[in-house]
Length: 353
Image (cartoon, rainbow, N blue to C red; front, side):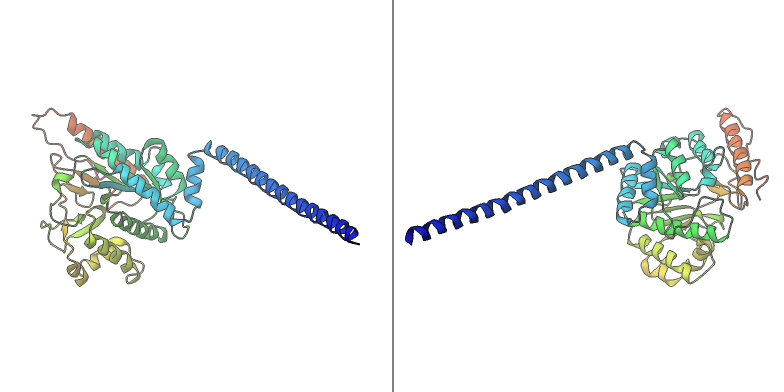
C-alpha cells in the first residue's frame, strides 16, 4: 500500500514537472517570435526611411506641407531665424513669396538683384528669410537662396497664383502675413518686413529711429515722422520684439474681425488712432519717402534713396516692366564718376502709376 502510494505520487510529480516545462518552453518560443517580428519591422521601417531620405529636399518639402503639427513647424522656424539673424541684435529681414512672383524673370529675381547692385547691401542677403506661401515657391527658393521657410495656409488656401488687390485671396494672404510676423516677434526676433516688389539700394539701418518700437513706410509722407495722419504702407516695416509690439500685432490681427473686408493697411489706418495704442505705450514712427520711396511718392534724390516700392501699381506684368527699368536707372546712376555733376533721376513709373 505505501509503496503503491509512493509510486503513484512520484508519477504525478513527473507529470507536473513536464507540464510546467512545456508551458515555460512555449512562453520562451512566443517571446522569441515577438522579438523577431519587432526586429523585422524595424528593418523594414529603416529601409523605407533610407529610401525617403534619398528624395530630399522633395520629401522634406512634402512633409512641411502635409504636416499639421504646429510644434514641429515652430521648431523649424526657430532654426531658420537663428541661422539668418544678425547675431548682435537678433534682427532678420523677411519677405513673402508665392509661385507667381517666383517664376523665372519675375519679381523675385529682380528683388535679389537689387541687393547685389545696391550700395553695400549684398551682405544683407545673409539675413534675408524668404517665406514661401506655396510648395512651388518653396522649391524655387531652395534653388537660389539659403534661408527659405515654407508657410502653410491655416485653412489650406492656395496662395500660389497672382493675388489681385482686394480680391479674397489677396486679403487672406495679407492677414496670414500679419499673423506670421507676430509669431516672429513672439520668438524674440526683431524684423524688417519688405514686400518683394521693393528694390533695396542702400542699407536702411542708419535711417531708422533709435527709439520707436514700430516704424513703417508711407504711401504719402506729410513731412513729420510723428504725424499719425501719415498714410502708411505695410510693405516695409521695422519692428522690435517686445511686449508692446507683440500686443500690437495681436490687436492688429484681431481687428480684421471689426473691419471685415478690409486689408491690413486699411485696418492699420483705423487702429493707429485707437486708445489701445497709447495704453500699451507703443511708439510709432513713419519713414520719410525721401529715403523709403515708391511709385506713389518717389524718392527723387538717388544720393539718398534706400528703397523703392512698386506701390500704386496694378498687375504683375506692369510691376516687372517698371522694376526692370528702375534697376537700369540705378545702374546708370552708379556708373557715373563720383565727381560727375549730372543729375540722375528715375524714368519710372511708366506702365505703373
